Image (cartoon, rainbow, N blue to C red; front, side, top):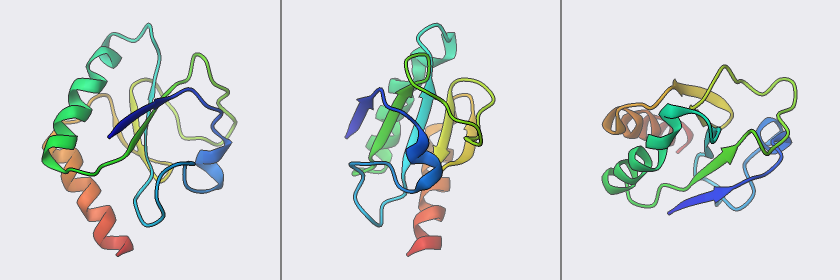
Length: 108
């Protein structure tokens, strides 16, 4: 399921994102409404979801949210797993699933 939230981001630097079950890597995508590449985020995430059912993602529109110091951010879209950048720009969905599976194995 892909959830779309506009929220404040201290959650990223202090632990898991609210609403994502414990034991599941917190996946967050930072976007802005005026970013041309961000228009593809939901398409990429739909393919990720098809390849890896059960992936929970929080999409954050940073134009409407507070981005505190220390949150890794360069531009949009930025894909993070547990507040670490794993892709600047839209990744290949299969590559992203491979990264996510590695994260699950590491934590599991």
